[in-house]
Length: 187
Length: 353
Ligand code: SF4
Ligand code: SF4
Image (cartoon, rainbow over all chains, first blue to last red; front, side, top):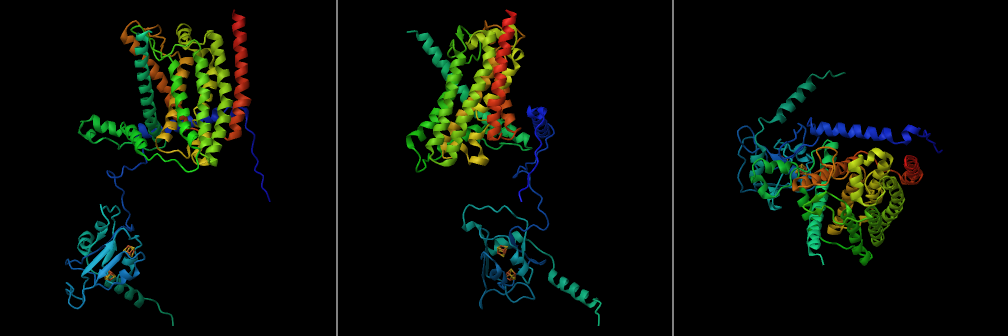
């Protein structure tokens, strides 16, 4: 059914467009005054002023080291497998390659490359990693002058990633286990 | 042949064209800055040639104000590829920008932008029929737009062209009618005489405020500025009559629009706000020294810039009129009002005499 919207005919005063003109002048001068005199602008002048990145932000994925500066990644290649745009390429050490530089691990990648031009910052790699070795960090403005430069290798990723103390995984597991023990099981 | 006249005219011509072009360039900047302020933004503040940062204080300040932006805009237009879309009517397509820009530049010729300097009158052509000339030229401006709309051979520019022809013709009538009271009061078509009359009797806007209002609204419509920018309504017509244009040809339409703004402001100042005169500091009679001559030009420029700012300001104040509202306003409100205005002025003059 068609709905008819009642439109009130304009009064004589409104037909002169004067209220609209006065209103327009008021609004525009108020805003111009606020920006010019009070300096209230909404523009963020980007390279000088930077945005505070929220904690849950998903920026560029980097590899992290443990508290002793050892590589946490064990070259399981799960992230390579899960990465939707295939941005990650891992070269495993093979039989002859270097052994892991930390205890509790068998191997570490010989090479680990992330193509930052392909990465879509989905966070799957962080989610899938069993060793908590890769994290999406807060970098959002990655700049390079060539495509090759935008493929970050293991060394670069590790140096950009920094350290993450302890392996949280075991702590989380412990808490989970405790929570299960305390769980009031109904029989 | 009077060589003196030719040389001085050429010099004045060069200066006027230069000043108008400069005004156009910087009114684009003003447009961007004022719109930014009204919308809580900062506007262009980055663009600068590499040497600007070595000038202490002034360099960064000018950059901050965007003073180099018009240069960059100009360069951008010049170096863009001059693309001709397939299917356009070539001759008209090339002709239209010229037809739009030439009348826009021509109107400035009759406007007295100052009194005298030395023994030169500060007007390019001191015509006896100054106002008639202006209206004649201004009404030619519509052809550029209609031609552009037709030449583009595509429907949205066509709509733009059609709308502008209807709009401009309607408002030209109100505009022409609105200045008749002015002419009745002064009794002369020469713009210099109109200014002279205002210098002795006070500004015309006090005698005929309705004329001024109609003239101002009509000049908004004539220059295709909001709230009457129907020919280039982006939201409805993509880009209006210049949709298919790019690079320098598009820039010429831009130039035409802003030159029209300059000449409309100049006309308003001349007809209603006393031109280069000010009622105090002895600025109301033709200058007898170079300094006073310059002061007159500055007064004129200041008044004109005020109206330019009004033009720009209004653009960020109002939404666009609907087409029928536009026609209604032109034919059913302003035209009768202008006619009544003429009648009343005539009666008033008749009673006084
Ligand atoms: S964030 Fe997503 S796209 Fe980027 S590397 Fe990780 S899995 Fe691949
Ligand atoms: S980063 Fe994590 S998921 Fe990827 S290979 Fe290394 S350990 Fe495996």
